[in-house]
Length: 153
Length: 289
Image (cartoon, rainbow over all chains, first blue to last red; front, side, top):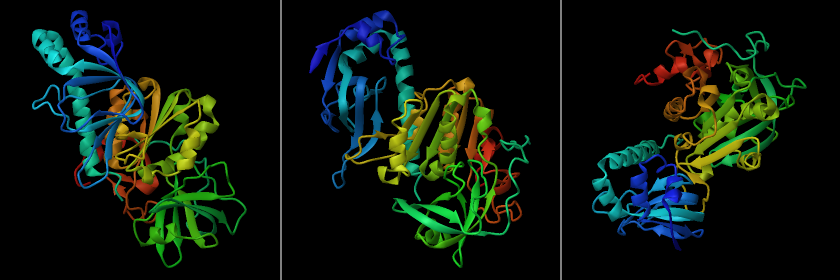
């Protein structure tokens, strides 16, 4: 289900709050609110990644689906968090599956217009990236610890 | 080198632990995970167990099978029984973890310095456990929950490898219904049958509810996890001297004589296992130590 959104909706999200009002207003023009029921697939690995998603409510699982093994949930995310960065990075394909673990509401920003906005508003675009990169860095750190399997007997 | 942390109740608060083991009977055994079991022990020679502080450990043995240092994981107020959660890691722990009700084990202790609970009075408290690290923190949780009005917000973050590796699962479920504390449980990876959180404990710290400069943190788990968690806590404003960690090394004698558990200037069985991160944090970064 899609619904239009306003810049006020967007500005309430912690990831966006504090970015320049003009930038947020322009971003809101390309943003829709979307609801997922429990179990709904939000994204599939390998599909075109055309959206940046900001979680307003609910819970999202990021999953790996190896061809020879069962689904493996590698991270769950909740309100205030964001996911989907492949809209920014070529070849713009989802690297994981994403699935709603409970009724979930997300703000969905169209990727291509967002890239254009980052180009057109370099100051705000830089601020945007200063918020996105720590998210990626933190998850990369966590992944390193997961690889170490620190709890292994 | 900085001074060692004071025992929470003062050096003379507890009697000297006995060096000779005492016999205990196993009265209950619960299999927590495929390789971990919790034993409830009752003393055979006395009516009550020696008093202990949350965070202390005992040397537990099964005749002819060896001895191991095991954290006390029960309620300090229940003096009639002793609870140990044991993960199979070698011959001694394998035998202990498999001990059935009716078996007799030998216990000496309690040893070591426990969690400095009094430092948290009036402050927010963060408890972070990884894997079996919840065992030495559980007595602390009993104390914190029993005296809830003495502390500020209580945030507990517990992580394990998979859902099947979570210990005290039923108790965790019960704790999570409390409204005066928040228990976050997360695993490193899970299948689709798990609807709980997935991700390392460190990822839960930025959104945890506590006032960093007015908080005390207690950590136990894999050293690298504690190191990353301590960094995340410091990023939230928790002062380094208010971060406490429990360390495990190869404890043998339990009384600071043999040196097996040495970490830099510390003998963990005697000076720890709970130590201040301000003192011990730099040692955890020394490669090969």
